[in-house]
Image (cartoon, rainbow, N blue to C red; front, top):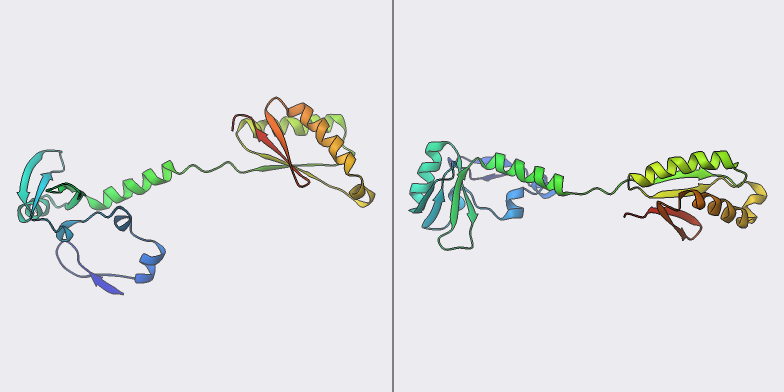
Length: 188
C-alpha cells in the first residue's frame, strides 16, 4: 500500500493490487482533479454552470473548497484548460453507469433437442418454441439424441432438420456448422 494525495493533502492509502485489478476510471479518462491540475490559469465553470472566465488556479481551488466539491480539469487540450467545480465521485459513478448502459449484451443462444423418430405434432410444438426464441433475437441450436445405429444414419437427421426448418423458415436462416445446425434470426 502506498499513500496518494487528496484535496486536503492528507494521505489516503490504496492497495496497488486493487488498482491493477480495477483501474480507476480517472486514469481511463485522464482527468486531473484538485492539486493535480498543472496550469496557472484556468477557465472556471462552477457547479451551477456559471462561467467565471479565466482565473488563477489558486482562486479556482479556493472556490471549489468553499463549495465543498472538487475542481476537475474537463478539457485539458485547450489553453487555458477548462475546469469545472463538481462532485467527482458522483461524476465517476454516472460515467460507469453510462458505460454499462452502452454495453450491449448479445442474447444467449438457446438449444432445442430433437430425435430422428420425432412425430409431426412434437416437431410443431418445438418449432413454436423456436419461433419465440427467434423473435427475441436469439440464435437457436438444434441438437440430436442419437443412439446405437442412428449414429450411422445421418440422412435421418438431415430429414428431421429439413422438416423442422420448413416450419420456421419465415423467421430464420439455417446454417450447418460441421454437424451442428444453427437457426439465425433474419432481422439480425
